[in-house]
Amino acid sequence: MHPILSPNAKPPESPQELAQLCHWIEEHIDQQIGWTDLVAQSGMDHTTLQKQFNLYFRTSPMQWIRSKRLERKQRQVSIMSAALPIPNALKMG
Image (cartoon, rainbow, N blue to C red):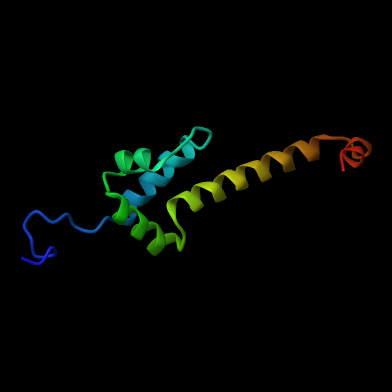
């Protein structure tokens, strides 16, 4: 029987499930997050998770995580540089 017609087939994941996973990732962004964590948290298998991220974000889950970490670091640098007096900021390069 075709997998889509199988009574045990899991329906495609919804954007809501993906949004919940992304929220979880952002809450744990400072921790090491691997495929095992993503699969366990989402309930999706590796392939489905990869396809869902590619469909909705046009990137892989790991690249999405790296992007979120980079965005966070950029915000932190921006906040820190705004708090530094200009002469001190110039000394730092």
